[in-house]
Image 1: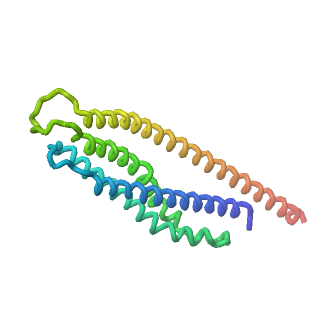
Image 2: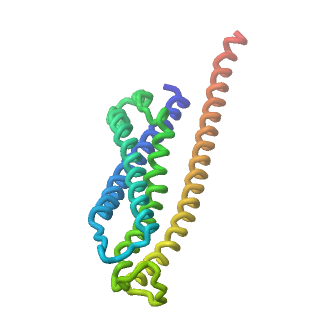
Image 3: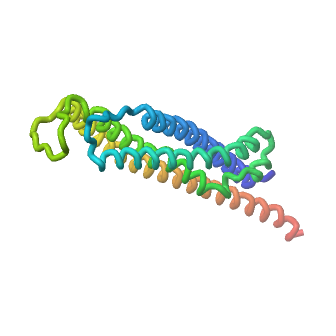
Length: 221
């Protein structure tokens, strides 16, 4: 095997291991967060005597449903692709990397990774805020109609406002960090690909010079 072929196979194996790690992380995260969301939906206790805002209940129900659907979609992709990658990665043969679907299914792997770590995490943060409002809003609140214009804030509403004021800045920081992390990761990947291309070009030049040096004695002969 030539040096350039060996470098290409090493790059393919590195991509395979990275894809496998992403799918494993996506499957674990999706299973965990979707399970928490389902438990929150089932275990939440709505006070029958309290008049909840309709928008709050709709937002909580919709956020939980979308959260579970997004994570289950990522889990489905991971479950379908991961066994094929695991089967190839356990074979101690350099040429077996061509049998792995990680190159062909690259977009699906990145989609599962984005759903699980970015979109799913943001939805989970929103789920926590909505759950705090649903859980704490009825605490010591006046059992009156929605048209009550009382300016007093109940302890439950104060707790919900506190959780929201904590979670909103954290969500903004999470988005900024995710963008910064993604840009750093893309920059690192671009640098690595540039180094690999330069290495392949250097190896190609060496092979060309070696071929010319071999052909030169025959030419003069």
